[in-house]
Amino acid sequence: MTGIMLGSKITGWGAALPGTVITNEDFEKRLDTSDAWITERTGIKERRVGGTTASLSIEAAQKAIAAAGLTPADIGMLVLSTTTPDQTVPATSATVQAELGLTCGAFDVNAACAGFVYALVVGHSMILSGVEHVLVIGADTLSRITDMEDRSTAVLFADGAGAVVLSRTEENNFLSWDLGVDGTLVPILYCDHGGYLRMEGREVFKRAVLAMVSSAQAALERAGITTDDVALVVPHQANIRIIEAANNRLGIPMERTAIVLDKTGNTSSGSIPLALAAAADMGRIHPGDYVLFCGFGAGMTWASAVVRWGA
Ligand code: ACO
Image (cartoon, rainbow, N blue to C red; front, side):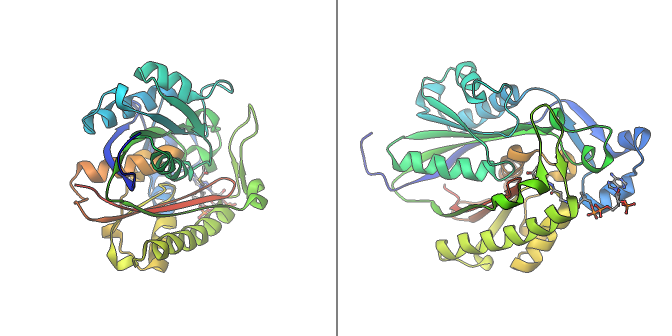
């Protein structure tokens, strides 16, 4: 805990998806739905299911730690965002901490699909508190709380995880954040213990667009930049139409947007780090680029952050 503590940057990333693919055609065979309906209304073509929140977390985290050029001993804190912990007690981060061979503290964060950005902001705060490297994971296994006989939710939700390592730097690359929740909207999207996800789709859609736009604008303003400066938006991967509507209002073209939902469906906490990892692996982000993260989810929560991509 020495040295100048000015800020943090993302130094490694990794992704994990389970092996079982469910295509829209698979749903066509057993539900009253069609590939055309799902594609047109959501943009989703296929999704992955299987594994546990811990197993997916571990795989994504191992890749992120290796990509950062670190070992588990270097990690000073683990923040795991999930809305589908493997057990009620303990936190899934405890299992992940042990399996990864970490020796640091670990805890879960639950802010539904905005959770990864919440966890990222918490991770950045830990760096400002003196931790050198924080492992931030977003992981969910929504298939376990989705009624696979209900066409209105079965086609949307799936499983996946992504992870990043945040490291202390002398130049701050974590420029701004905006976190919020409107708890009066709990009834439009929830899952009771032992139950399935229940959702008022149209209401969630409408609120999601409003939340994404106002939260992104707040984060951009605090960072002192405009949408023209943003090289890449990494939005929550729920529905391509939500992303298009928010982008339209923000004035951000889809070419500057990370999309994986056609292949992953909505993986909640996994969605933003999965999209980030895919974009970074494809070389779509360059040193100095401004990246805008923007999530929303049950609660309703919202979360945005602006980072400058490090060298
Ligand atoms: N196949 C065919 N028809 C369907 C399907 C399906 N898979 N699902 C619903 N329908 C039907 C409905 O029953 C309805 O039929 P009706 O008119 O006879 O009643 C019709 O399609 C239209 O339904 P809407 O709900 O109005 O359709 P909409 O265009 O709004 O699309 C959708 C539905 C895709 C769910 C959309 O509202 C949406 O994406 N909402 C946001 C969902 C979301 O982002 N949730 C995650 C939030 S993040 C988190 O925290 C988990």
